[in-house]
Image 1: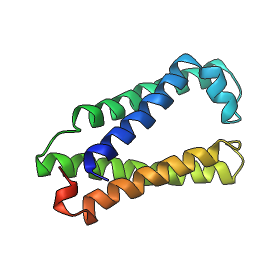
Image 2: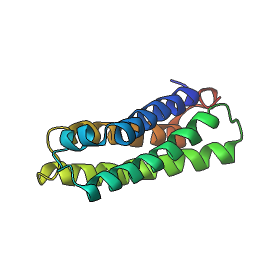
Image 3: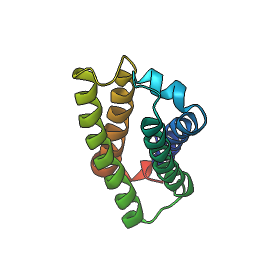
Image 4: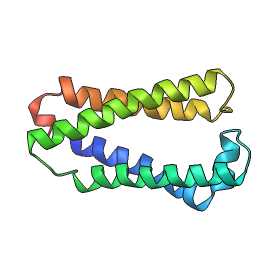
Length: 128
């Protein structure tokens, strides 16, 4: 896999979840096992806004070849993936999230491992 494809995968994941949280907030909340309350809906929609930011950054940077820029994007997404993995795993194991929590755990694991690979292990030809 090339870095460009990792950026596009991240874009798709972010924007799909963002659309779901913005346009079908009650459905997404129910998948997480959360009550459809005004405060939860608002928090879900604010989360969607941040997902749009993350998705748009990787979409617009998919062809960037500057090593410093790539490193900044990769490292930031890797750290976010690790933090998200910890939070989602905790929420799933303690019963805060329903079964869909495992999907979120898997998504964060893929993001964290994928960006860590490109940050530390990928051969140079995969970075273009």
